[in-house]
Amino acid sequence: MSQAGQTHATLARLRALRLELETLRLHGHREVLGALPSNWMEILRGPEKTREPRDVELPLPSKTVSAKPASREEALENLRAEVVVCAKCPLGNLRTQAVFGVGNPYARLMFVGEAPGADEDRLGEPFVGRAGQLLTDMIGAMGLKRADVYIANVLKCRPPGNRTPAPEEVEHCEPYLLRQIDIIKPEIICALGAVAATTLLKTGTPISRMRGKIHDYHGVPLVPTYHPAYLLRNPAAKKDTWEDLKVVMKQLNLPVPPKKG
Ligand code: URA
Image 1 (cartoon, protein in one colour):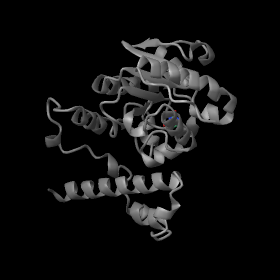
Image 2: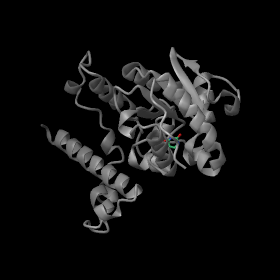
Image 3: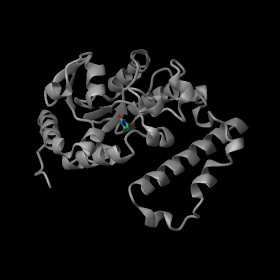
Image 4: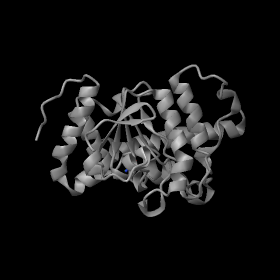
C-alpha cells in the first residue's frame, strides 16, 4: 500500500475508534473510559494544526470501486465514498464530515430523519445525541435493535445552526437517499418528523394529519411519525408515536411487544 493509502487507512481506523469510544461515552458507559487518559479524544484527534480538514474524506482507491457491486455492503460503501466527497451544495464546505447512514444493509425497516445535528456532524453517525438515544429506545420498544434497522437522513451534511434544509439542498441530496433505498430495499420507511415527511412526500400537509398512515415513497410504504427531538420536548406525543410504530410493526408482521411505562 502507498504511503498515502496507509495514512488514509490509519486515519479511518482512528476515526472508527474515536466514534466507538464517543458512542460509549454518550450512552453512559463511563466505566469503559475510566482506563483511558482524560485527554483520549485529543490524542486520537491529533494536533489541530496538522490535521487535514478533509483527512477522512479522501476518495477510496479506485481499485476498491468495482463496476458491479457484489453485495449490498459493497454497493453502500461505493455510495458512501461518493457522499463523503460530495460538494454539490455549499453544505459540503461547512460540514466536519458527511453523515452517510448506519445499520443493517438488509434491513426490513429504514428510519429517515431530517439532517445531521452537531453531535452527528462530529461523530459521523446519524441519531447519536439525546434524540438518537430516544430513537434507540423506540426501536427497542418495537422488539428490535439499532443494528436490525437502517438509519439515514434526507440531508447527509449538517445545515448551519440546524436550520431546516433548503429546497436545493434536498434536490442535491435526496438522490443519495433514493440510492440507499434502492440498495437496502426496505419493506417500509418510517419518516421521523415533519421536515423529513413533508420533504420526502412533497406536501405541505401537517405531520399531525399524515402520521400513522401509510404513504407511498417511490414505491416503498412510508409511515411518518413525530421526530424524537419533538418527543423530548413534548413527551405526551409519545403515545401517538407508539401507535404509528404499531402501524409499522403490523406492516412487517412483527408481534407488538407490550409497551413499558
Ligand atoms: N435529527 C435528525 O433528523 N437526524 C439526525 O441524525 C439527528 C438528529
